[in-house]
Image: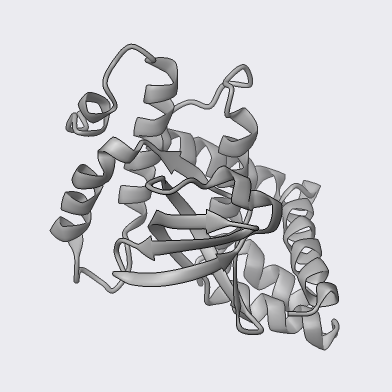
Length: 216
């Protein structure tokens, strides 16, 4: 992948974040945030991971939240308004629409390249992570959206890490829902995010106890 294409990729991500923050979507954004926090729990500005949590919400708002009854998302609006954009940008938008969202197990990470196993798809991916590679260590678990672009796989900015000791539980949850509709339901991502938030605020409780506690 050319440096120019990779720069354009991250520029598009930033432009999508800016669009999601525009006044015209304020009402929808507030509605989406209230819905999202009902799913994952309250996000407080004083949380150590506040920025990461907001990044996760923004991507959920951009990719998953339906703005209209016909199912249009922020990404769809961006695509429509960029219909006369550059070929590169239109290529990136198409790639974003076809992204893979999964829970990944890190098999190894070196020099900005991270080898992972997608637990739901049961598939090995090699991610080009650049400076984000420092966030991943062998045995680590994380949720992310992965985009295939010009033969390379790039993670977007929304990443949620989970403790390595929750691997068995996450596998059991995936097995329970496998084959439901060909993709991981949003409810599982939200449950795991909610557990990660609780764990951050409950440092003296075992991760397994928090993650495996049934929702009430």
